[in-house]
Amino acid sequence: MKYRSWFQCIDPGCGETYDIFDVVYRCRKCGELLEVTHDEARLGRTSGEAWKKVFDQRIHSTTWPYGSGVWCRKEMVLPQLSDENVVSMFEGGSNLFWAERFGREIGVPDLWVKQCGNSHTGSFKDLGMTVLVSVVKEMRAQGQNIPAVACASTGDTSAALAAYCAAADIPAVVLLPRNKVSLAQLVQPISNGAIVLSLDTDFDGCMRTVQELTERENIYLANSMNSLRIEGQKTVGMEICQQFDWEVPDTIIIPGGNLGNVSALGKGFLLMERLGMISRRPRIVVAQAEHANPLYLAYKKGFREFEPVQAKTTLASAIQIGNPVSYKKAVRTLQEFEGIVEQASEEELADASAQADRTGMFNCPHTGVALAVMLKLLARGDIKRDERVVVISTAHGLKFADQKAAYHQRQIAGIASRHANQPIELPNDVGAVRDALLRRIDALAPKGAERAS
Ligand SMILES: *Cc1c(COP(=O)(O)O)cnc(C)c1O
Ligand SMILES: [Zn+2]
Image 1 (tube, rainbow, N blue to C red):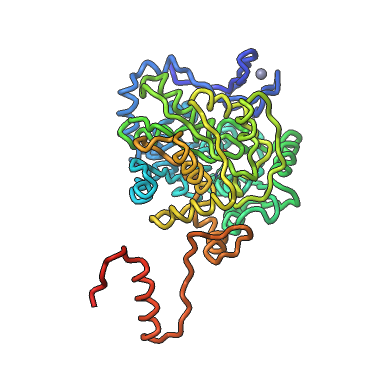
Image 2 (cartoon, rainbow, N blue to C red):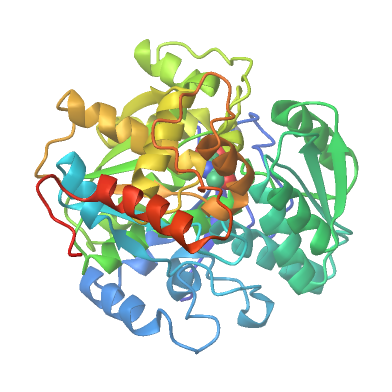
């Protein structure tokens, strides 16, 4: 008997199922979200210990496609896919960075940052896109008429879609809110040859348009409502455990926008638990920007009601989302993982990002949101100082060079730039350079230390 997976409606009262190679994003019976479900009885015929050995052997190997942090877990991600249709760029396997100095400075010595931005297109979106584009490749190979794949994006989804589609020679269409993504994020799909549509709206507006478009034409929808992406993204928690020699951290903090990623994180942990690979759960914290905080507001009301918000401009542009698609899945995850939701203001996220950069990181603003939230939870005792804490860093800081430069130049309105560091402009004169330099070095030296003359 082979490993199997299928789409299943998340409403337990409905439970309708669909073939994994069906073009279906929501339940046709009740309109609810779908999720990929696996034949766990079959997966369970291998012990948890044995699965861990399999993953340890495969990751980073050159045996196609198992070297990838996603595809080393192929039986638990998308078993029916044929290996030759896997479109992989060696995603996953990203650095789990021990933030030793930052952790020491803030009083959490066991602090780690999962650098998901150290990836082919610079964000965790690669983890999900490899699965989605692979399925499209397989469907096209089977003769299904799918002329293109489309997404609405706050920047990183379109970069990932464009790259994976380009590698697989599948046309990609991306809808971006004009002037709301960084130059680096815009130039990625352009370079990869995608059809880039820059629309006069925000992300939520692009999302409505792409949904209508993909309902009417046979263009395939790549947004995270498409639960194939969640299957790839769920491997992040598996990989974190693997990197800790299969120990589960105490707390994981993750920035949330459309809330697919937090749902994915939880899904991976629950699967590992059911398969006997781990025996406890981490606490999961979702970090939102105060300017786009619908989950935070719902959390404050005990999730009794949900109101979409009009998201305001935020430096954390990838999570500037007022009406998250995966709200229900995220609430389910938070209820299963003693969840906490906290928010960060623009100044808090920019300062936390810059403060951590001073200790050797190079954070994107979304990671800044997560770091700022961690500092708040520490201050009020929701995170204890002896905990092992993992912050999920979702994108590479280089995608946000413009706003990081503006921070250091103190050019962001309403932000004092507490940790600004500016270049010293000088004539090219050894004496002047020496004086300026020694003044700065003296200022850095710990009190009482003498400079050798
Ligand atoms: C997409 C994205 C997020 C948000 O993930 P969701 O699944 O939408 O909650 C956070 N950070 C970055 C950098 C992203 O690209
Ligand atoms: Zn249903």
